[in-house]
Length: 390
Image (tube, rainbow, N blue to C red; front, side, top):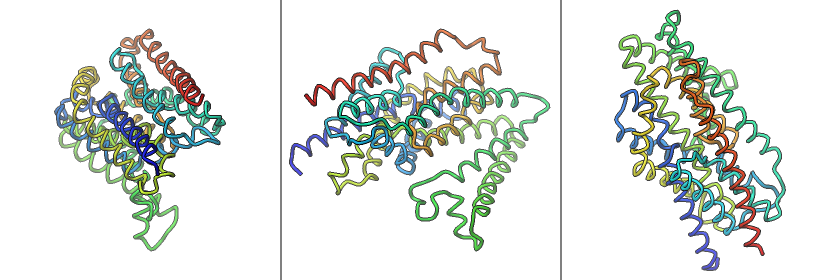
């Protein structure tokens, strides 16, 4: 490989690291533990430390799905060249930096997806309509599904006829069952999931065994949380909230790392000595450093807003956030954590306050910023790549 190509790849890798740092420093790194900090379940600095570690773990063990989709699943018929990858990453990071400095909620998923598609079309690529249908469905349904689940949970948890030593353990059981079915790259040789790995140790193989093991995980989680909430209700709720924050932080790393390193994946065909795992490790390190260096300030700021939610409403917010994030990882769909969290907060708020604290104007501006960031990234990506091709 000639030195010029190596230098271009190095430039793309640096842009990717910067993007990963921005993701770790931004709302994706700060939001998962903000409810736990607001509920005084954990300190700000400890939350930043954990969110960095968990984001790194999620990036390395589950990040390949979204990374492959961003790298080669958004446009058919072309492979992004190194110059195109640099354009995508600089556009995504630049628009996010503008959003952070101006206060507009620019979502990484929208900017990166828009710029990849724009650059790909400028190179003569064809639309990947099947993947667009998946992405559009997730993006459009997230506010309704996430907000609806959050609304239902926030309506049930405070009810006196539904004791918390029953309702919260049921939630823990559902979450535990889902955790057992998550796919991890290091378990690919034994089925990919914790439940499938456990099934390899049982003489009777099959779907029924995997299902039974998954339900067993859920039952154990429910029993532990029931015991904890029963002996110390306030403390048990805070510890369950902390566990949910950990799962959301892990899921954030798994889904968001693809936005930073996914555009690099097509370049690996010309660099056989660089494995996708190494690229994911680099993205995970970028998220970790971003979380450790800049997330504490954002966690403290966001937690002040979450402090008014209380542990029950925070639990109602984080449960659907975890489920939607992992669904996106499973489908290989880039998703905005801003959209997930904001939708869940609004849903739980409608149940508790009846919508008094929800500003239609602010909500409208947020949605407009999301749509506008996608359109702007698409237009800039197409235009810049078209000029470079000329």
